Amino acid sequence: MIEIKINDKEVTKLFNELVRRGQNMSPAMKIISGIMLDAVRENFEKEGPGWQKLKPATIRQREKKGHWPGKILRVSGQLSSSITSKYDSKSARVGTNKVYAAIHQFGGDIQRSGQVLHFKKYKKGKYAGKTLFAKSSKADFGMKTGAYSIHIPPRPYLKTNDYALNAIKKALMNFVISK
Image 1 (spheres, rainbow, N blue to C red):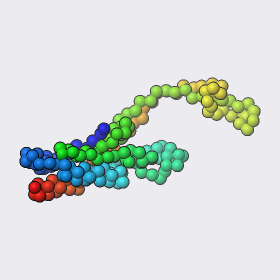
Image 2 (image 1 turned 135 degrees about the horizontal axis):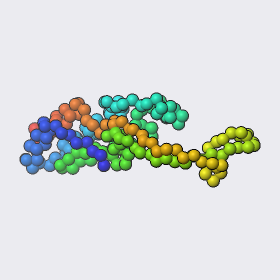
Image 3 (image 1 turned 90 degrees about the vertical axis):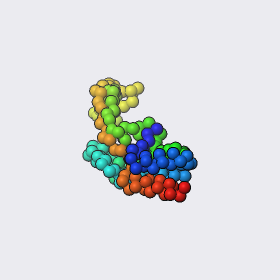
Image 4 (image 1 turned 180 degrees about the vertical axis):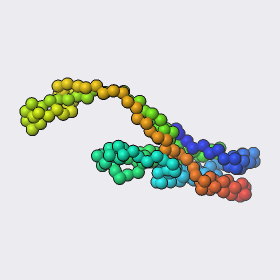
């Protein structure tokens, strides 16, 4: 699972003070996990911050499949709807269980091996004189394509913003004061 980790000195200081007091942190962690979840949902809605725009070829591909106009990382909605929050007495977590999530969060290159494309040359009928893609069992010949890679730019969606960090600090301070 990919998770958000907040490395903020003020948040860590407040959290450590509560742990030192031996208090049950579950109520605070529940609030914090909700704040983090809201921040991630906002990233999907606003497509960022800092997300690279889709390339024209990707937009054309989406148009052909009926997925354009649309939002980045939202073709099927599976990634955004897989985001969950969890908490216990020691932590608040937001993450996803999708195996492809990391490549979108961190970016990287996907290596694709070559494949064989199969063709049939039609001699009669409505496709007479044309060469079209075909199943391997019906093909007259095949052609091997070369290996290639696909670059996926990082689009960090598991990220909090300053507003969320301030809300977390406020939630922790309210929890400290109320105890």
